[in-house]
Image 1 (cartoon, rainbow, N blue to C red):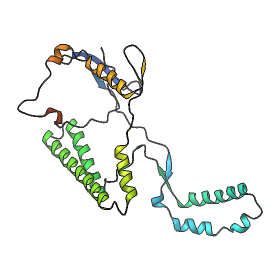
Image 2 (image 1 turned 90 degrees about the vertical axis):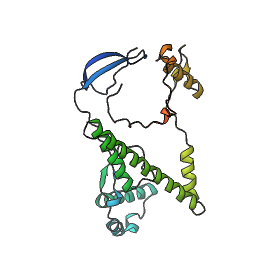
Image 3 (image 1 turned 120 degrees about the vertical axis):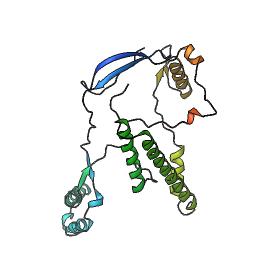
Length: 247
């Protein structure tokens, strides 16, 4: 069974070689070179930047218009078109635009400027470690410091919500509902007989059968066990990168 290299454009990878199987897995390892750097597509959509808007001039422009004469003797639709035209003209003069971010997720409420700096340092340390410019111990310390700051920020946010629950119930229950919200990331699957599976339990069984088939019985009989009481399931691993080329 051969893994596939997935790219969104031709000419991104080359010099593909098979390197044999890894351990007891029946999958073949693939070695390849990235021929050119992959750039993220920039969004061309724009949105209003209210943080740099001049609302004083906006109100002044709208107050100069003689609305009684402009809307006199007209129907509702004509009045709306006239009002909309003046509003858009004032908006174009007073409210600048900015390029809309391509990120679909909003910033968490516990994220502040100091914490953003810690997260940025962690990403830079990871990039330097991957390029061989930063030692593993330095990257690990930066990673642990960033994680500790994130845990503290989340804890302080939850303490604040619990303390002010009587005065601000809406924020508290919004936070709880976000934690309880479930998101489906796995679409319908097909089982061994070719039938379409849509239920969660059935999809879990299909995935379990698939991943179990990757390893042979010999490999399963020699599954590594924890030594000296160490819990390997909780070992810290470096975060995944942001490459656009994957296997």
